[in-house]
Length: 320
Ligand code: SF4
Image 1 (tube, helix red, strand yellow):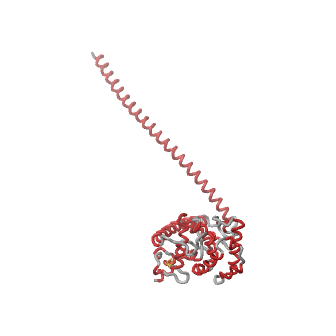
Image 2 (cartoon, helix red, strand yellow; image 1 turned 45 degrees about the vertical axis):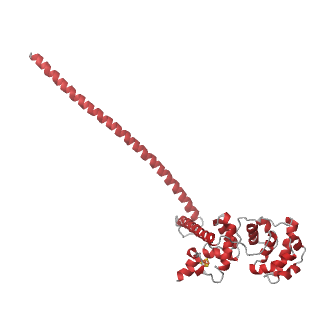
Image 3 (cartoon, protein in one colour; image 1 turned 120 degrees about the vertical axis):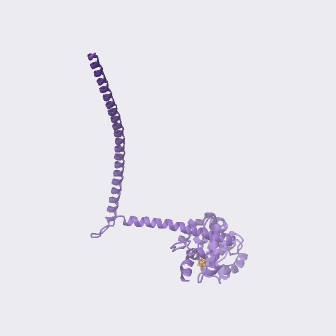
């Protein structure tokens, strides 16, 4: 019996011992698993950080190379003793670019307002020169250089009666034409141009006024402005003729910036006016310049464009 009790006690002890070991074993297994998971997470993190580090380093090296190239370019022509200013020029360029983008947006807005105004107040705008066909308009436009449309309209009826077709004018002498246009500006040159123009129309263009701006400019007395007028008025082409009124009014309103030549003005207007509006826009600006925004003293107080006119804002409104 005593031996039996001892054996029972031993078995109990072994059982307890076994249970304790099993529990410790399970705990250790769980810990190992947790550590493994933890290790995998850490490895993933380490990998991500390594990848990011490599990317940042690559970008850093690229930027450094770029900057060094720029510095060497900038310093190439800098005299000794003058230290280069890294990024100075680039900063200026970026600022200028942003300024231009802003200016472009403001300009577009100004154009839209001018278009809205004219479409409402001047839906019909045409040339004030009298003509019945392309040849007559060509004669009238050549005569209108440095001369008022009013005066030209006084002269052309007699010219058209005597020389109704280019064939008739081609046979005339400059002296005969001179007699009809002597009250116009530059009658000497204009009479030679008219005869030369008529002769070239017959010889090179079968008596038909061409619709191409380059071809038109081959004719004596026909410059870019006259060619653009014919192309837009007669053939409804998207051309912008810039005369003294268009040049002045566009600059005053702020449709052009720092324009020094009619060609520069033409390019800026063509860029911003929608193509289909170019022919009428030419007349809007001419008529506005002739009757409201006149050269010597613009009639700003009765002008409907003053709310978005650069000249009014700077010269008139700021003085009040
Ligand atoms: S406000 Fe004056 S300057 Fe401006 S478009 Fe009118 S008339 Fe010309």
